[in-house]
Length: 86
Ligand SMILES: [Zn+2]
Ligand SMILES: [Zn+2]
Image 1: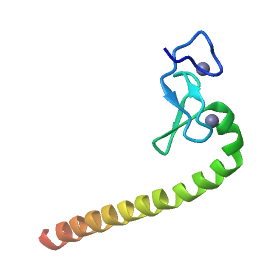
Image 2: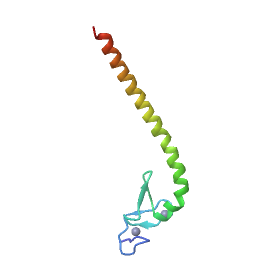
Image 3: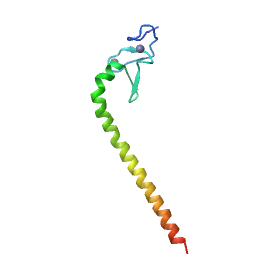
Image 4: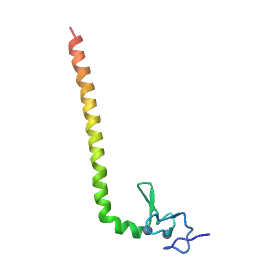
């Protein structure tokens, strides 16, 4: 049975996609659907912030679209209420 590169007493559950190190559940961090060991996470730290910055933009855009959609819906409902009221 394969053991973790960092924990010889623990069973490996995956392979780091970056350095191919065999790692256990505690060492394994899933990022963008890919396993990373903590050593690679550290080296990715600076780049990870940039990636996170890229990921924030679609989230903000999605939230903005969602908010505008709700505003339009509420505005329409409010307008309809005022229009239907005697
Ligand atoms: Zn690694
Ligand atoms: Zn480990």
